[in-house]
Image (cartoon, rainbow, N blue to C red; front, side, top):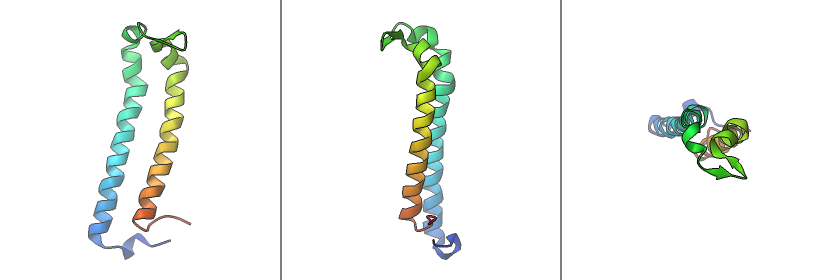
Length: 90
């Protein structure tokens, strides 16, 4: 493990910029699955997914699956970024 103070300020700033971009991407998708899907549930019910209206499916199960996927995506992406910049934990 490399101490974050041992990397150059430019590299640290780039690491933070990419970490911040990852966080905002995750927040966007979290917002879409938390609020967007439910706000437009009536309109989405016109679409059928696995035999269920899409709005109902997303409220009952789809959003939960999306949140789990977002958690794994966040962990994998952040680990990759930390390893790339040499600040990964052992």
